[in-house]
Amino acid sequence: MPEVKNPILSGFYPDPSICRVGDTYYIVNSTFAYFPGVPVFASKDLCHFHQIGNVLTRESQLPLGSDGMSRGIFAPTIRHYDGVYYMITTNVSYGGNFIVTATDPAGPWSEPHYLKGADGIDPSIFFDEDGKCYYIGTRPNPDGVRYNGDWYIYIQELDIRNFCLVGDYKLVWKGAMRDAEWPEGPHLYKKDGWYYIMHAEGGTGPAHAVCVARSREVFGPYVGNFNNPILTHRHLGKAYPVRYVGHADLVDTPEGDWYMVMLASRPCEGYTGMGRETFLAKVTWEDGWPVVNDGTGKLNKIQTVGLAPEDALPERDFYTFHNVALDAHFVTVRNPKPDMYSLTKQAGKLALKVATEVITEQTSASYLGVRQKSYHYTAETRMEFAPGVDEEAGLVLLQSEAASMRFVVANENGIRVLRVVSFGDKISGMKPVDGRQTAGDGTVLAQISIPQDLGGIVLKIMQDGQKLSFWYALQNHGFVRIPLTADARFLSTEAAGGFVGNTIGMYASANHGKSGNYAFFDYFVVDDI
Image (cartoon, rainbow, N blue to C red; front, side, top):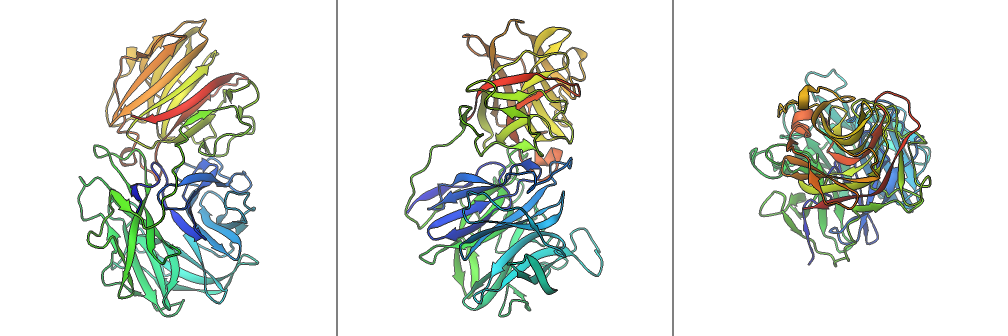
């Protein structure tokens, strides 16, 4: 039987939902204020997942405005019924809960069908054996919220043809713990005549847990499993290498075996830079209840899967720009402007517009990135850029508008310079170089002059644990290291907050000025070391 190393999706892939159609499994994830929204992954063995597209690829499907990075898309669910794929989610920045549909999970997907009266967040849908569809979600306590996270799970019939709720909603469960906080991410299943609600509670941090209840009737009453929570790592201590486990979804195989996907995080030196990732566990059923990884009750570093192995596709972490469209892995912050980039301005190069917007504000900055997947990697690009006054372009390691690290070519008093700039660092207390406090927004940690007649320059950021180093190469010369080792801990959930993990990518800005300039990138690569 094949084995898979957890996580099955490394990096910022939280809130996983899974469904099976025939012998193929599909996973979707939350994306918050990144665009496009909701990546779609496919696999035939639950071990090797490859991205086949994104669900929300048009601004009409995903309006984000200028909300913070941890707004936008929360907790999608993917389901399939009668030849149609359904993705339901919440856009907390605009419109609330909605459904989109497709006949091919790779897309295109429909325009949103917003659900009037569907209060709260984290919606899911369930198709019963008689063809009826039910909505399950979370909402604040209708009698008044008494404490933070005082919410309920509710069920309501859904007219799936007209995309509208039918009848009254029914509050069905509040969680396993007395006065449970944040019952969220509920899913509804049916097995052997029982309806099951599986959800997360305790918040998406250290107390996160997966719990389950069941009933003979879809509207309850639901009785919790006496063995709840069926999965958590909250009792394993802060030093355990995998934490924050919860927000799960179940799937069965054609042979009748069961598996669960869920989110969890892997801190490094106590700080989580990659956000919440997607993990896999085996599920068995005992006395009518699901048991996760029987014998251990926690996530395994290596998970055995009882399916025929699929050939692994090569990792697509080396990106060139010879195609007519960007690779599906790339994301922007919020909705990109139509002229933000071009793949045709120079053959084989990505032309990134030097925009007015900056990465340290809640705007649509000129940025294209991919998810950080390891604490030990190199990110490299070759760039041609002639900066005007106050302009800069290069690489950015981005947690959110509140925390970032920039490695950029800039213009200072007519002199071309290469500088490292941190923004939002409240941990390391690193000192600015030569008394410089800002360059655009942030603290200049290192700066050197580079030739004015520069052709191309190769920029490289290396991360080893929580240490960052910065390298450059000119013309045909070898790499030179900037005399700086930076602390990456501030680029973490624990320090900067929010629900997102880090991305790293290419960036160009005029720092609030106007510009018609472009930075040209030959390639972009992220390799584990």
